[in-house]
Image 1 (cartoon, helix red, strand yellow):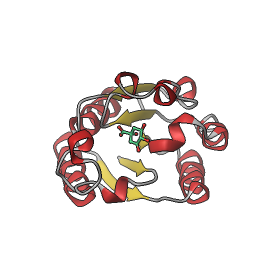
Image 2 (cartoon, rainbow, N blue to C red):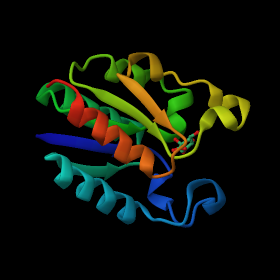
Image 3 (cartoon, rainbow, N blue to C red):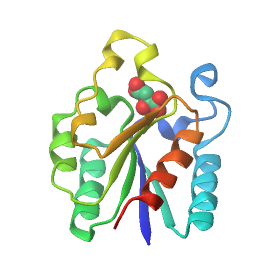
Image 4 (cartoon, helix red, strand yellow):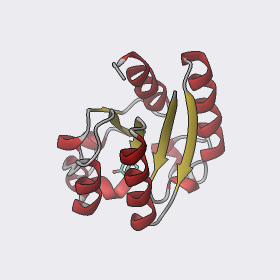
Length: 143
Ligand code: DQA
C-alpha cells in the first residue's frame, strides 16, 4: 500500500535549521525513519520535499487521482495557503497533517492552520516521531 510523505518549504534544511526547535536530524534521516516505519507497517513510503507551492499542490492532485494516503507537513504554508487547502479538500484517501514542533506553543501566526479542517487529523509536537505516529494512524485507518 503506497503512502506519500510530503514536506513543504524549508524542511530540506532540517539538521541545520533552528536545531533547538526542529532537532539535529536531517531530511534524509527523516526519510529513512519514515521508510523504516513503513516497512514495519506494510506501507510503501515515498518521501518528498519542495519549497514550491505549485509543486506541492501538484503532488496533492497526484495523491487525489491515485487515492493515495498522505502524511503532509505543509510547513509555513499551513498558516496561509488557501490554494493548498483547496487541493487537500479534493482528495478522499486519508491525509494526516504533521508538525515537528507544536505550532500552538509558538508565535501567534502559527496558531492558525488553514489546512487542519480538511485533513483527516493532525499530529504535532512530537519531533520526527510525529511522522511515525501519522504513519501508524494511516496503517490503522480503513482503505
Ligand atoms: C512546522 C511548523 C511551521 O509553523 C513552520 O513554518 C515549519 C515547520 C513544523 O513541522 O513544526 O516550517 O510545520
